[in-house]
Image (cartoon, rainbow, N blue to C red; front, side, top):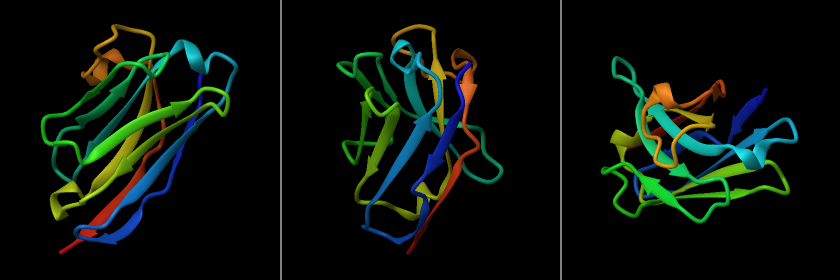
Length: 124
């Protein structure tokens, strides 16, 4: 079992940056692909980014447009999401998740474990 704890959210002005972290428990972190999702009020949970077990393959949601970067440090059992050029429409709760499923996993159902989420608010 994997437990995930996100941190790094907060309030930022449009155009600013935030770096989210997700710390994982357990010694099997490197066997999971890791992803970030987000959910705004009244909307469905949306795929943001996905990173393979080794960190060599990365996938992003269409809206990211090179503004976000996902990375991981298997020695620290941590995955990161660097977010630049933030927009008000990026306001949401951001969740990290672990998947033992396919390499390209962009659906909520393809992830096995979820964190509690961290709030990101971008003001205009």
